[in-house]
Image 1 (tube, rainbow, N blue to C red):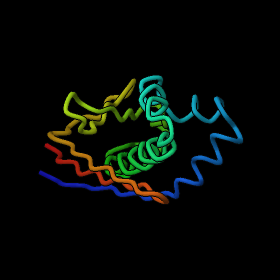
Image 2 (image 1 turned 45 degrees about the vertical axis):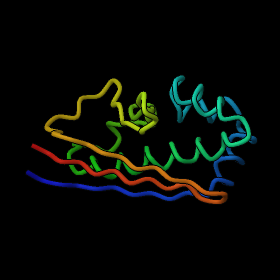
Image 3 (image 1 turned 135 degrees about the vertical axis):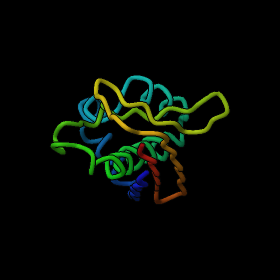
Length: 124
């Protein structure tokens, strides 16, 4: 058994500026349709949620990167952060096989200025 972790923190302002400057081009490059729908539903707080998902994708990549043959084998939209029925975030890997993961857990947090995420992976 091996345990890996990843963490990331980002300024919400950076994500807000990217969305305002690049619009759909940025959103469609980084986020899945489900992530966009979720974040947009948060109205005034949407940038915090976009930033939190951005940090979560980065943290997820860092947690699994040691098992990738090539870091370019995975893209932004291969990692999807969605909430379960209880509102707890969960990672889905899309169009990519990440073998040997026994368990993966994620924690996301945000405040007025920053969003952060931590991912812990247990490997078989």
